[in-house]
Image (tube, rainbow, N blue to C red):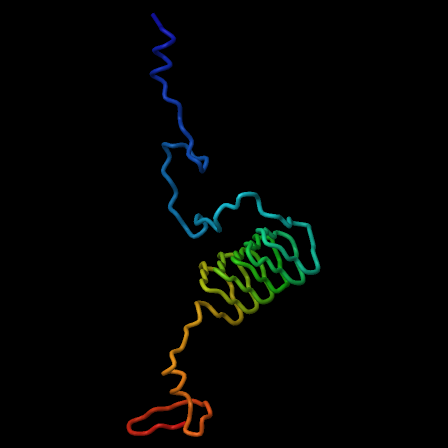
Length: 178
């Protein structure tokens, strides 16, 4: 005879993983897109969605996601700016971290890092300590990446000429040209 308790013990429910795929299906290979864009903030980022146009200056200290059009200046000193795949920014952007998946025209300054996804199109200057560029991204302009290196006193004095003026130093066998 069938007993209710036995059937409960024999059936094993299928457990879903955090990504929404069943536990018995193979996990997809990790890619650049699977990497977390930024640590999860304690609350959600402010969003400028598709269809929204903003002209002017945006300042703050929280995270911002842009999937609309922004023209002007963006300054989020301690926040993260993410330009979504539908986002267009015609502005100078300054933030702790800048992630670009859409289009940006202007100077991009990411204090910690700038990340360009394969769909990114950047026209302008990029300044950051760390720069990540995925295949397919378009970057036209000037790039300054990495921390500035402190020059030693010996290196600084090597560029001072006999008259005390600074200049280019060219050293050849037995000669010094200033």
